[in-house]
Image (cartoon, rainbow, N blue to C red; front, side, top):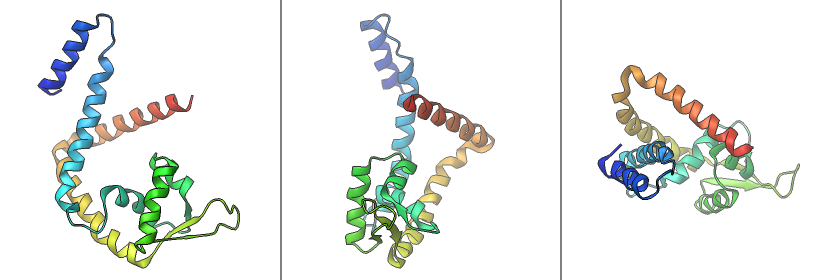
Length: 163
């Protein structure tokens, strides 16, 4: 934990005796990792055709064998339908995806990536992976244990939220 974070925890403990501050340690680390991952690709997205959030949405579409609904994308990415819908509208306007009527459910459009979208994501996403790979290289032999621990952590959180 960083000194400022440790001091924040200490102050909360001092001023609120009995308050369980232990979640702060994990949450602070998760937020810190997210910030570092974002920082690793900042330069990559300066002037790029897509934002990081748009890439995150397009990645699962890139190799999808069939069109996907916004609800399915939202569930897969853990995003709100409203947020997905807004981003999809921008991507459609730029010609990177298409939305077509769903014969099974007229309320849910079917989303497919266009060749232009494929070209953009095929250029940008490998460079993002490379930048993140450089950060993760420091894990060495611990990488598998970190992945396993984070998987258990995410699954436990999902189970708690579904109750």
